[in-house]
Image (cartoon, rainbow, N blue to C red):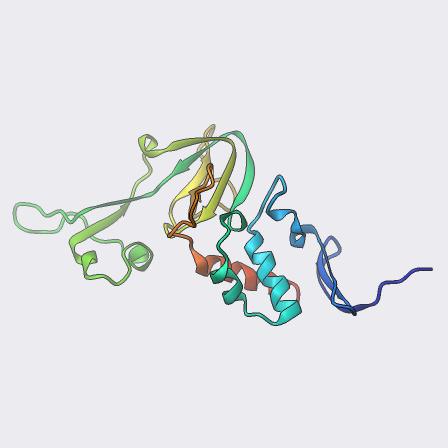
Length: 202
């Protein structure tokens, strides 16, 4: 009979786990496997890399994610029946007033930090929420995205406008850029990594 001695096992469930053998080898299955970068359905491989390095080498999650320069490790891919459309929700326009100087459009406090941060420029502009068909971009039946800094943008089904799951705050990435985008939402990837670590009881 054969056996594989493990130093530690981290199981989310029976089909998704990371196990480390006594000689330091890592065995991964399910969402924690290495097929994320080159497989047919990549799903934020940078998070999996961060988990593995944290469990095996004690490297902080933030360090792995912030140091990653491979855009392929940040992307997600999903098949969308009927095709997907990108739906940017934020429109930023100069603050508007009526003839009496009264403000007719007021800034959205909810998205102040995520859109314009704490800059003084926020007092000069108004951010409001719009869902206009003319602002959409057709992406096709297989969509690829990474998470950016516009929390209200999304990818929706072309057939019924419903949200494609887990695409809130997404930025289409149908063609891989030569350089790493400047608007990657690193805190979101870090938060997702810690979420998965919690599910692994770490």
